[in-house]
Image (cartoon, rainbow, N blue to C red):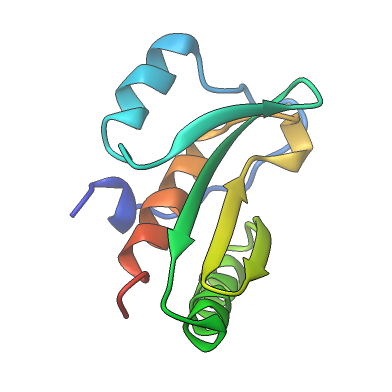
Length: 113
């Protein structure tokens, strides 16, 4: 279990700092199955989860949605037959904040729930 999984998201504003390169390396150690990606010059965290069928993928999507509502931090979720792609970033700062790493860890915790 990651320390991030037990952390809570903090309110984030447009002037909040993005994670530094050093923080990125350190935080990625706690969520090794996630990949930093850049889309439209915005750094994001992304992971694809595989499932046996659409029903399992949809159930996982709903669990992630419940987490997002609890923490008031919402991802991009792409649900397809047998897989869900989850992408986290902080819209207010157009990049990565510690909240994104917290939510990635929490997402990992509900994959087999």
